[in-house]
Image (spheres, rainbow, N blue to C red):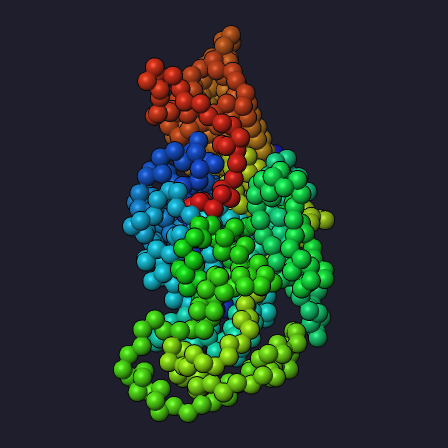
Length: 609
């Protein structure tokens, strides 16, 4: 459908605004599960440096995707899942703009209560590794329960409650036990079944190929190897995620795989992996979404291993290997972590231990009538006298034989390859300029809430109230393709303008005779008269100078990126260019060289994304 501006106003702006206010946003929140808290990593966005070169003014988390701040999407996803204890982790220099946006941006203020907390560790920099972030004292103190880690650039149409339910069925503590701090005291490991292989983690991978308009050659990918879980006694209902949840045994970035292959002329696999798992699936076209459902004890695992730099490659990768590689769990100090040993004993503990009698440890997993797998023989058949469960682990004797260390598994939800793009939930990390444009244009094609309601359909959680916020602001003889475009509030559009498959941000001004195709304009942009833009991303408060329709010089930009605040002179005709002001120049005044491949790569190097 195309929108043609009417010759006379049919509705006042106030009437249109009243109509929009009556159409609520789809923020239906499921029953909260209080045992989880969420941490959203709001990093600098190195691969979006055209728009995030000044993180103190405009951090990556505020870059708009389809006219909403990037961080709105993971926040909304958490609220819809029922997780309301949310913390945004960001470097101190980016705190001010984020605080301002949380207090003033209408999309962020419209989210349900409570408001997310902002955490700025003092030692956090723009290049801090994601695992190192979780070793900082501020973050260690903030983790008080099982937790979810996700990036600020996540777009996830898959309901988080479905992933949460899968984790609860397969990995949650026995009897509903959770990890963390309860009434000022840590819940003991024996309560949740960690020693029996429960309370592991869950990570998410999505396919990078097959999505028209979004998938591109050279997309960031990972090698992910999984092995099937034992078949449940009761088959999962149709549409459930259970058939696609498997045990993770390997997770390696494709770049690392290439380095290993080039060096060794092959990709070696350990015999121990093949001996332990007879059926292994290896996929190389999926990407880690950096969405992790983690039990509380992982906090201590990260703290104990100071060599860990990346959550994806180090924490998740080594954890997966520890499940089958002999001796690795001991090297990672997992026995200390899973034995739940208090750091310092006191006199009361010693007095309590002296009066305790030996109890036989109860194996709850062996008693379960809905067990997914056979109980571990060592924990069932070799009963060993031990202190009562209320005795701290550091007070128990060291002369008793050690049981084999059971590592709770890290599971993987590997989204199946695309068969029907219209029904497949969208999962993507928007961490490159090409993805920023393609995902914004894809979301612009979603029917508005008003359109979906009129047809009786359920609106997408990413749908806007209206595709064109104020139709009365559009001049005569102007054409806006409403079916695949978004026009935000307070946009001024001149006459004889043609807008097709584009997203126009708040407060933009588009001059007479301009033509925009497959473009993303951030807030406050000015596009002059008779300018032609195709496949461009224009940063906020940019100005593309216009000119007369009969001038010999024309402004035509194709597949270009324009830094916020930049002014493009009239008469510029260019393709595949980045318009930026470089602060660092050589002594002779020459520009610094930029590697296009580096600028196009994603944020999967383990640094703060």
